[in-house]
Image (cartoon, rainbow, N blue to C red; front, side, top):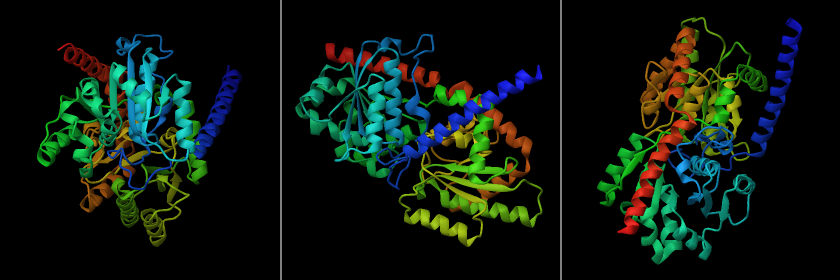
Length: 476
């Protein structure tokens, strides 16, 4: 029986080797064209995964329930006309999440129309690719302006406005028709930066049917900020935690795929299989805290050396660079690495839509977003799906995902948090069992509450209530 088993393993390894090549080809072709100020809670700028998930992640491949064979909590949306309005079409967290909703709705037979409010004057590769992905899945793509957009908004059973910035589309396009659309409008908000609280963006917010927000922390922030700064009241607000796509979970739960992906990525980085690899996977920007992470990583190397601790060779990988345009901040990061003479320990990887290979390759994820943290942090639940412990900032949505001391370790934001992060890096480097146990607990938490069906169920509850409100307001 040994030879057939070996032959099967050989075939599987070849299969996954081809898949790895395809994934890296996609990563090269689909480079993130993003501004450096991205924050996954700032959906007007661009992101990795998901967060954007944050990263952005495998969400563009998410297929709803198509092929699952079972009922969907969104089945009641069959034949409904849904208009999705995005502020932009990019590889940032906001647009990718809206695309995922589009695919979920198409999977149950809804008629879905997509409008992008802000498009580049000249068509770029990302816009072209994403529009074609939607067209291939039966999502209709309409111009943002013109009679066709107005007629669709008036005819639609539901209108989903994605991000606060998209609010500009209402007056600019619908004009006097705005009051007719507000009763059936669900506003999906991801931003958490103060400069998005402008009347020109959100003046219609109190009159829509509801607001859907990714975390309780962000929802509370919006409630307080709109009242204190703008003097307006939030509509009924629904918190919807996100979930991992079926595709990502399939890779995460396949030991053969994980092993082959791990081998290929580590080989490309020059990292051995037995080495310990910490990663931060976000678009490179000061708000994501790559600088503070690298300082903590360097300090942890110093502590391990001074105390002569017995640990594998440690490496750090920063996924989210832009090789075509190195920003001032990224230059600072690279100069720091050179100054501390840790070039052989720190690796920079270009922005990529495909995070699964890197999640399979690393041992610990560092989620180091600063200030108010992540709105949610899609990359966090994706890492947990791969049984990775998470070292995260005690801020934003991360605190609603990571159970401190059980699925990871939390540290304060800011420079004062670097010492805690350093100590946590050393803890996980020196305690293998604790690291593995945290990873397993994180995976169990994902299976309990952060899967696509969980997200679909949460969204279904919101959509059903919004449709009921729209119907009652129309009848009255």
